[in-house]
Image: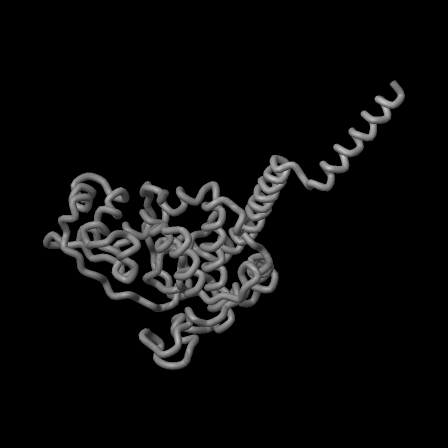
Length: 294
């Protein structure tokens, strides 16, 4: 009996040693990874809230920015958020949390690019040459700062990350390039849990702003922002498909005509003047629900 007891004891020790050498149980590793993801997203909410305070403080209801005051106070307001963007890797987060992170990064670094060069009349005045495109050097190709441990340009954030990784046309109503004809700069940060509602609201507000789109316009036509021309392929493969993508933001006969793609399309001039409060005019907000991208 003593021999059997010792044998059992040594067997148990061997099993325990083997378990330790084998490493963590797969289920435990998955739980740890899930907990780390949840913790990262939870921490991002408080950081985005800090950026939201910046937007509430310096952006008015029409999306125009008090750049002069932000420039004086950026070290204590905007820059701490930028430092967090630089050291944070969102790759393990949910899709909506990651997209919110990159939209906020684009908008935050656009603010930084302007305040670093303010006063300017347009973002295009930052680089040498004429103050309107086309020009040899684009301000959107300048390195603006680190995001996720890599120094980025605005073009990289928008065209190589957001548009490529997420296939979400509504981002064109959310990323704001500091121009009058851009969508309204939202007075809150984007967050994963509220992202689809925020993007739908941005879409409706932009499409119903008759300084940026005229839907309908006249004589069976609609006059659209050039954003919908430059990035039309993101909304659909044809002008008719683009109209169908916009239909959920409208009601009644206009919605039905858009859904059938019946309007002739023309495009409005794009106003690159800075979205500065000193130049601001009033605007009319709205609401809608576009279908989220799957």
